[in-house]
Every structure is written in C-alpha cells, then in structure tokens.
Image 1: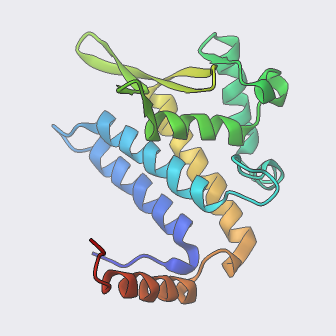
Image 2 (image 1 turned 90 degrees about the vertical axis):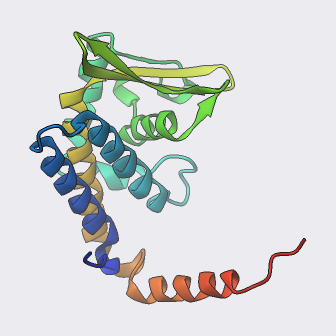
Length: 200
C-alpha cells in the first residue's frame, strides 16, 4: 500500500477515492452503488472538515470555492434539483434558490451521511426493479429541514466535481493548511497520548 502525500493530502485522498470507485464500477459482481455512496461519504466529509474556514462557522468559505472551475457546475446542479422539485430546503439562510450556497448544499449532504436522529439513518437508497436508482438525503436541525434526491449518476458526477473543487482549493492555498511536518508532529502527539495509562 502506497503512503499518502501529506503535502497535498486532499488531492491524494480524492484521487484515490475516485480511482477506487472507477475500478469497482468496472468489476463484475461488485456492489458499485454501495461504493459510490462510500466514496461520496469520504469526498464530502474529509475535505469539508479540513476547509472549515474562519469567519464562516459551519460552512466552507464560499468566496474560496467560487473561484474554482467546477463551482458553477455544482451550483447549476442545485438549480436543476430545485426546478425538478428534487430539493426541499427551509433553513433560514438558504430560502432564496439563487443564494443557496454550494458549501451549504455540501454541508447538508455531509450531515445526512454522518448524522442520524430518532434511531434513523438519514440517507435512503431508492429501489426500483431490484436496482438502486437514486438516494434521498435528509438533514434537520431545530425544526428546519433539507431533503434532496440524487440519481446514482448524479452522485458519481457530484463526487468527482467536489473532489476537483477541493483539489483546486488545496493547490491554490499551498502547504499552509497541512504538510508533512505538521503530520509528523500530529503523529508524535497522538502516539504520546496512546502511551499514557487510561484513568479508571
């Protein structure tokens, strides 16, 4: 197993995830849709957690994302979902479709995969004729709700676009976010923690 490149971790992680998805897609008798969902899970959560910027609390800094090549494509996909009545959202800061931020959309998808409530899973694969055709993603908080339905092909496409977007952000920002030196320091700190005896 080759090691990660920690100077460009998001790019490396994203490229590996997309490559695995492509290999499994072309492998007979594999559960390719399960891999698509797993890939989206990684491509949503890992970059989103890494690029939670100052002055923009829960959402990635929209100005940074807007400068990327694929931002408009993701934004257009959101618009199409609204037009086709496959996206519902009543969160206060996203009511106007034309101000619906890509970072907010990513955050809600991420929450639907990472969170659960009332002992329920918040993403629902939709079966038709014994095949998974789409997935419904649901997020809620304090009475506000987000819900969208994406086809498997849209999930594949979205995963790749999100990957490209964050890779471009990482390339522009350079090594100041994370690099081999900070990685080695983190490993040392966490190994030191593991060497301690747990208190009873």
